[in-house]
Amino acid sequence: MLLLNLARSAAMVGAALALDSARKAAVSLAGCLLVGLLMAVSLAFLTLSGYRAICLGLGDVYAALIVGCSYLMASLIAMLTIQMRCR
Image 1 (cartoon, rainbow, N blue to C red):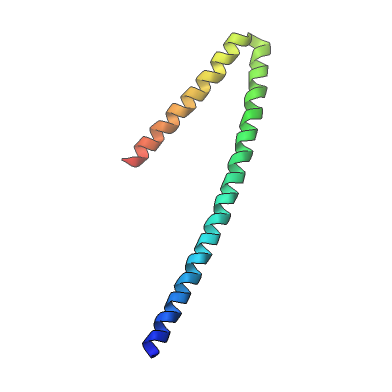
Image 2: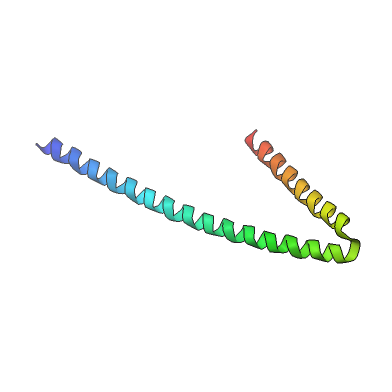
């Protein structure tokens, strides 16, 4: 009888810990999604303002080339760092 109560208590403690971990993970995920959304919006505004500033100085074609190439370089650098990290 004592072992049954001990097993039942251990199962309840385990379930409580699992639920608490799931709640913390959900809150953390929601926070990360909110931060990611805010960063994406700020990146869009910065891209637009940078494009418009380059447009006024150099023209439409060069502005698009500069902004596009800068994003291409940033993505290539990010991909390289991710691959270096996996090794």
